[in-house]
Length: 141
Image 1 (cartoon, helix red, strand yellow):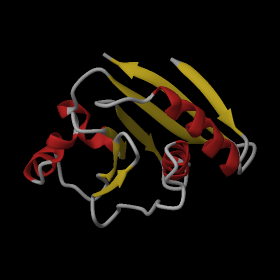
Image 2 (cartoon, helix red, strand yellow; image 1 turned 45 degrees about the vertical axis):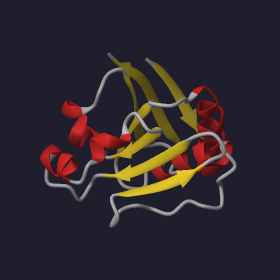
Image 3 (cartoon, one colour; image 1 turned 90 degrees about the horizontal axis):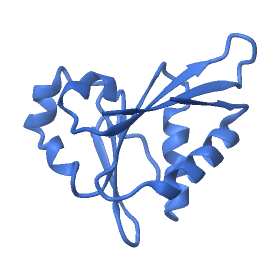
C-alpha cells in the first residue's frame, strides 16, 4: 500500500493524471471515500491524461458514463444508488470490465463481485486542513 497527500483539488487532478499513465485495458480502479473527498476530481485527472478533460460529468443518476479516448474506452461508474451487486449484474455492469478501464466510485459496494486484481483508492479528508486529502492506494489480489 502507498499513500499520497493531496493539498488541493488541482493536486488530486495532477496525481490522477500521472497515475493514469500506467492504466491499461481491463484495469479496474475502485474509488472509495466520503462525499466531497475527491473521487470525481481523481476521475477528472484520469480523463485529462487521455485528452478528455472537458468531457467529465457525474454518473450519479445514470450509473455509468462512457468516454472514448483514442485507443481505449473509459467507464466511469457511480454505484452509490444501487441496492446491491445483483443490481449491478442486472444492468450488465460486469460486461464493461474487459472492454476498457473501469473507474468505480463507491465501488466498495460491489467489491465482492469485482475480478481481481484491482486497485482500490481510499480518499480521506484531513482534520487539520479542509483542502488536504489522504489517498491510500492498494492492490487487491
